[in-house]
Image (cartoon, rainbow, N blue to C red; front, side, top):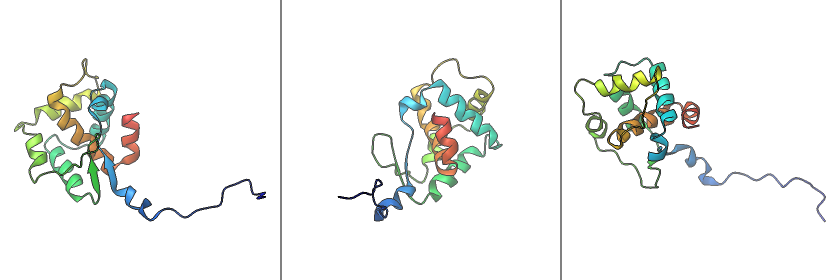
Length: 139
C-alpha cells in the first residue's frame, strides 16, 4: 500500500507549450456586456494611442502573433490582409473616438451587433499584448 499522500509529479504533456500560443476571442455575449465595453475602453485609453493609431496597433499585434486564434465558437480566425482596415472602415475614425469616451461615461445601452467585429479586434489586441489585463476586462 502506498503511504504517499500526494500524487507523483508528472511532466507536462508535449503539447502543453503550444497551448500558450492559442487564443480564443471574446464571444458576442461578452462583447455585448456594458461592463466589458466600459473596461475595454478604459484599457484602450490607458494605451494612449491616437484614434488613428488603433487599427495599426491591432494589425501589428494580430499579424505578428505566433500562434492560433479561434473564435469563441471554435472556428479558426484567419484574417485576410485587409481584415483590420475593412473592419475599421471609418475614414475619420469617429467610432474609435466615441468608443474611447466610454472610459469616462459607460454606454447607456449594449453595443449594436454591427460594432461587435470592431470590439472583438480591440479585445483581441489586449488578449495578445496583455493577457492578464484581458482577463480583468472580461471579469
